[in-house]
Every structure is written in structure tokens, then in C-alpha cells.
Length: 309
Image (cartoon, rainbow, N blue to C red; front, side, top):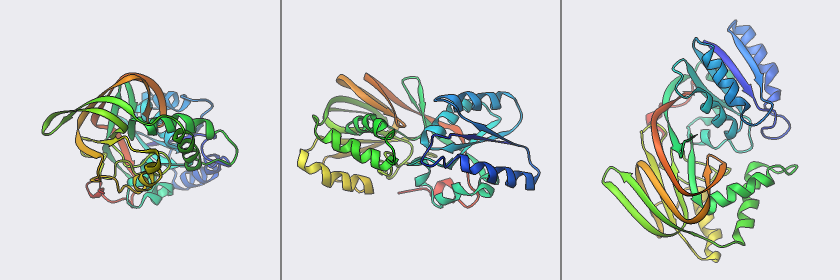
């Protein structure tokens, strides 16, 4: 097994990922195992390097050393490559995907990652793009679109950038007129109305710690769908507090479904959040890719089946 580390020097603050290099070198030299360190130089570079390492042949484990964006790029490079696995050494400001795992601190342990077990995790297909965690349309997508600007400010962390995005969005029009079609175990379900959020999730957390899909599992071959009715401006702060804690499921105005496909048509162009990357569309489809991502859990992490709300 080759061990390849994709280091994003721009992730987080104080070049946290770059500080890993001496640890990686000492660890693998002591173990006598083959390793390689690659430093990304531009957006999309992790995808390119991950694809090259996978196409070089032989078993390879790729470590995304950065934030959720680095993990997503690495995943995009190895999808469909049976010899490649990915895992995450979190160095970003949010690291939302790994938050849902019990013992998520173990993702910062080189030994446990090197000795970890690969399990098939679900991916999400979104109008031809790949995602791993959470996709959405609505207020949260607008926030994600705005937070990308704040993340470039000095001393602003991912969670702080998200809060600044929330504040800016608060002063704009709320809600989107959406037609939503969901494929569930009980058949096709359609909803039409004005919604604050429409969410399709394989993971649980996004936006720097908001637990938008608290019951989602990346190992069940399904997506969790969450629809939030539009609410009054003065209700938003209280709702966001519950939403961050994952306490919104089952409350009035929140609809929850589970299935394989969500199709959304918006009355006019709207921002779509695809694992923190934003685009604009009037029509979007989120579809589960069951077990498409060979994801390595650290040695101390509990079995996938124990991941729950």
C-alpha cells in the first residue's frame, strides 16, 4: 500500500497542513512504508494529483490534508478507481464531514489513519458534479455563497465566516418558491411551496458545525431530505440555534424524508450549495451514489453501522 498525502497549504489558519510534513516523514520512515507528500498549488490540483496517483496503479491510500474542500477534490480524483482509497486528516477551519463519526478526533492520528479500515461510503451526484456530504438550495446556500468571501478575511475562521454570511443574508428576502420531487421507500413524494431550505444529505454537519441532517448516515445507500418552511425574520435566530444543534427534525414547519433522489425546480435562478461549492440553477437533481466512495475510518472509530443521531 502506497500512502500519499495531499497537503493544502491554504486550508485553515497558520498553514496547519504544512506543519504535518515533519510528522509524516518521521512516522513513515520509522515504519519503513512507502509514502509521498504532494502540496497543492491551486484549486482543483488535489483532484488532478489524486487521479494521477490512482492511475499509477497498485493499492494507494490518499490522505486529504486540509478542509472539506480538499476532501471533496480528492474524492473527485479517485471515483471509479478500484485500487484507491481516501481519508481525511482535518486541517481546515470547519472539517464538517468527519464531525459525525464517533471518535472523530482519531482522524488527527496518523497511526490510526494508516491502520484504518476502508468502508464504502455514499456519494451524491448533483447535475453531473460529485459531492460527499450535504447539498442544498435556499437560505443556507445563499449563506455558503456569501461566506466564501468572508473566509478570505484575515483571522476569520470557517464558523465565523458562516455567521457573517448568516447576518448578511438576514437582510435579504427570505425563502424560495420551489417544486420538490423526492423518490422515497414509500414512492414518489411531491411538495410545492415557499421554503427556507431544501436539503439532500449523506453526512450530518455543514456550514461550520450546523447539524442540518442529524439522522443521516453515509453508509445506508440513502439520502436524508429536509424541507424547512419559510419563517418570519424574527424567528430566524431561534430556529438557527435549534438547527445548529440538530433539534429541528419533527418541529413544526420541518418536513423529513429519506430516499434516493431529490429533484428541485426553482421559480427563477437560485444558488445551489454542493459541499460548500456554489453554483446557480433553476433546476437541480441530487441523487445518491451508494457505496461509491472508498473511505478509510481510523482504527479507533466505531463500525459504520453504529453511526446514528
